[in-house]
Image 1 (cartoon, rainbow, N blue to C red):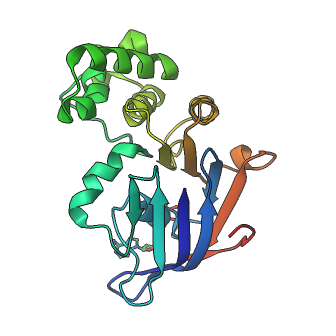
Image 2: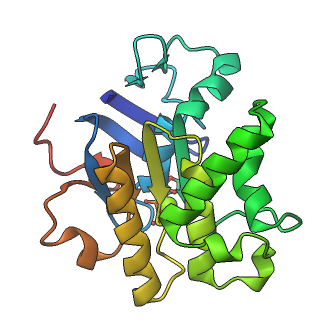
Length: 229
Ligand SMILES: Nc1ncnc2c1ncn2[C@@H]1O[C@H](COP(=O)(O)OP(=O)(O)OP(=O)(O)O)[C@@H](O)[C@H]1O
Ligand SMILES: [Mg+2]
């Protein structure tokens, strides 16, 4: 599904955030992305959700294939197509990024409204997503009245309400206490068990040690384990 081929990303000040990354992430996998602060985890994820591209000169190539017709290639896909491709994925951040002037239901419904889904279908999908993260009872609450754990569950519901093929999470438990962090991790495992590919950047060894899931480990922009190509 995701293929990095010799991907290098250099920022303006000649800082190499990613250096010659080659790896694959397969459909249905749950993959951890680990590494110290500044190792390149967020940059790696940005390359996948197409917030940024590899260097134009000798930057390598990324392809992300959701279906035969939904296909992203960092070398050829035009900026204008990226919004359409994002409909196939969801992203969750450490700081939730909920809209403060809308209630829980509307935060989750917004992406569906923007692409013209009918109200009746929106309701079904939003209720399904809220149930999966266990927050249906708070659907009319405003984000600022929720705990951090609850806000993150809303953010996850928003990221999966359109049934994405791929869920990307950038340190989703970084702001949560251990109980809420475990809860969020369980939700990600459940989403993966239902068929969505999950890539999760994390600092928390409790999650990835003794886990059956594969781990991609970055250090100073380089991939340590080059096990699968
Ligand atoms: N837009 C940018 N401009 C300049 N440098 C950047 C930019 N984005 C990232 N970097 C640099 O690239 C390197 C990798 O950053 P990145 O955010 O990917 O690390 P990270 O592994 O996510 O770190 P953290 O665990 O702190 O979130 C860092 O040294 C960072 O300062
Ligand atoms: Mg980061």
